[in-house]
Length: 79
Image (tube, one colour):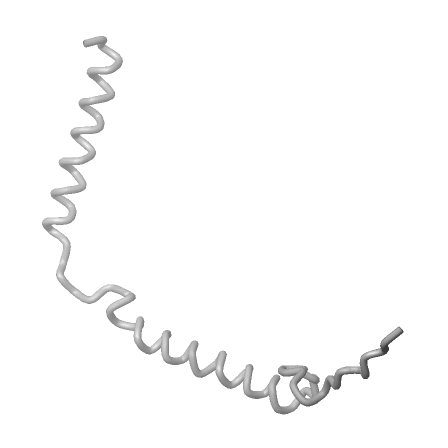
């Protein structure tokens, strides 16, 4: 093996070992997602729901949801 490749492999292996040691010694406390994940999810759903409710009811946008009953066919012309 070339010296440069050997050195690179040594650095990689050393980095993996150091990361494993750091993870072993990590405290088992809750992380951000475990602490605040559900609260953020619920608050985001409430916020988006309230904004869409406001937009749908108060802004006066014509949504034009269904053409049924609004379009009537024209009489057929025979030539």
